[in-house]
Image (cartoon, rainbow, N blue to C red):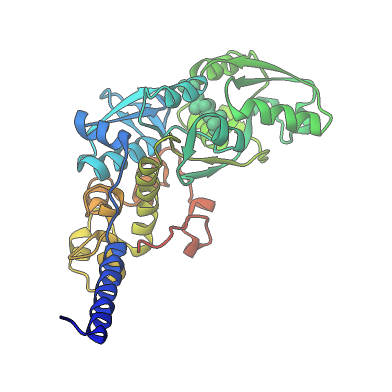
Length: 350
Ligand SMILES: N[C@@H](CCC(=O)N[C@@H](CS)C(=O)NCC(=O)O)C(=O)O
């Protein structure tokens, strides 16, 4: 028979043991439930909604392959989940097709110059991942018109694409300044651009990234001038189905991982050196040793190693597709790391 005092100390030991076990469990990754992740693993590929018509961001190149900044975001997610950046099928989507494609599960995610707005976030059945490109809407005019300000577009006819924030911002920007205009609305980018080139309108309006893309790849770039005005905020971000928050986490943390890798200075070239790092922050980020990283998301613990090795960090993706050595010649601007005065900031990988 146990004495009463012994009983009490036994009970205390049990309570202490249980507490320490549950504390230990709290450090471990909880089981991840994601139907989208299961589907991707079963089919062995990610289905990503993409732009086929926006050089620099998403376009089918001469080899028949998708290429561009947004396309590389899809590839990074495929590398994170499947360990293979090429395990992606791209579905070309024009602006008006995006909502249905994410709602009916035709695609697992979309990375296609899509602006994150309140109404889309709430009515499209979607969750936005962090912004991958901070943009704003601008205007392009034929250089020969010699225009420099938006006020000079009073009475103009303006080419714009349907199903975009562009169409709505144009209306606000013009009416807010008491300016008259007629819009020529087209269903996709190629027809909008062709309409502008054919002189169906005096100006072409879209995200500045789009204007730069079209100008740089035009037959005679000098024939087009981008006005020095930005009429909106266009934070371009990937989209995932709202019904699958665990999958949204995977996409979000892959984007954060690209940013964090740049902040650590880890690139596709030097990743092997970083795998030997003694720095606990870097060991955690890369999932080295006993450190949990991808396991929190239900994917390979070293998911960021696959992403960086195969696709590179944010800066590498930016430079490869849009940077000074490309026809677009974009500077980082506000798309720089927060440590360089930009807006890119990752929460801690802890
Ligand atoms: N960011 C804006 C505009 C996005 C957009 O679709 N832009 C056009 C013009 S640059 C485009 O990419 N069109 C390609 C296409 O429809 O094939 C939005 O999310 O509504």
